[in-house]
Image (cartoon, rainbow, N blue to C red; front, side, top):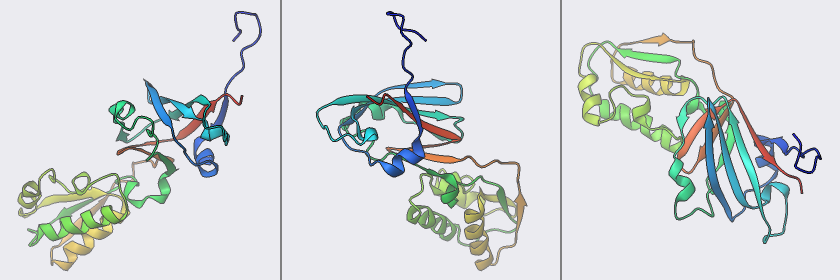
Length: 220
């Protein structure tokens, strides 16, 4: 690409976002100016104090793009760019290895009950407590069947045969241990067709998985 004066335009520096966040802490003011989604990718434009450069000039505003490729599971809550905390838009931003979050692993197990569950609320509480202590971005309803409401889960688990839950190994252990403790026989179906993504991205309550994440910015 060339500029109007005929000189070659400088390409922005592109660095691994996981490595950048391990070296540089996010500082404010930092605001999100735009989102751009294309295919299964996402680009978030950021403006503010250039923490990504290690710059200590708090009065110089710079721009940067956060680029995410091959996005998988999750969601992005777009209004975060325009809320009352817009100059702290990256306050809760993090990029981590998905492998480090057991609750976010692929839901390769399906657990079926073969008899009514005497105390379904106890099972719900066990899953809920695990997710809360794990600081998970998912709730019990993401794993327990018909659990959009507790009444729905209670109704499902009162049957002689039912799908109790679907989830990764961490959820399988909790569900199976509780069903065994309640004297309910069960069967586990191993669905190993799922592929684990590389990264987990969290931003102001939103989360998604992706294969690659980069930061793009000018060095000067």
